[in-house]
Amino acid sequence: MTDPETLGRIAARRAELDGLEEQLTKQLTDVRVERDELAITERVLARMNAQIAEERAATAPASAQVAGHAVLLIPHREPDIAESALPPEYQRIMAAVRQGGGPVMTRQVGEVLGLDTGVRGKLEPLRGKLTKLAERGWLRKLPDGRFTPRP
Image 1 (cartoon, rainbow, N blue to C red):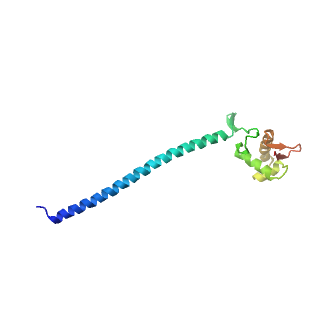
Image 2: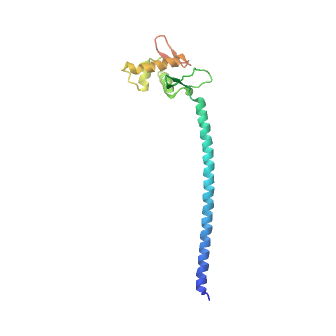
């Protein structure tokens, strides 16, 4: 013979376990749904990153090997090429020339860029970059050695 009190305890425990099972089943379903959403998010992000990398590669300045070193090539200025196609260092140089408000000497550009303008050796590489920008049509070099932005 089974005791009614024991049967009541068993039924109560069974109901408690059934409730716990229902709760755990819901949690497991929620976990699986979130895991699937994360997998989808990872795939979307991977596609977006690949697309961004392709766009950056398409607009990145071309480079070449010179004496075993990678050297950035400065594109010739054309109507369909934005200043953003220049390497960041050259973009800063262009901004410094524009900031001068008129024809500027290499020393003035160096000061804006924070170079030690008292040392001639620090200005020569900058002068070379300014000349390269002028040769490629981004700047205009005046006969007196000053530079101005092209309109």
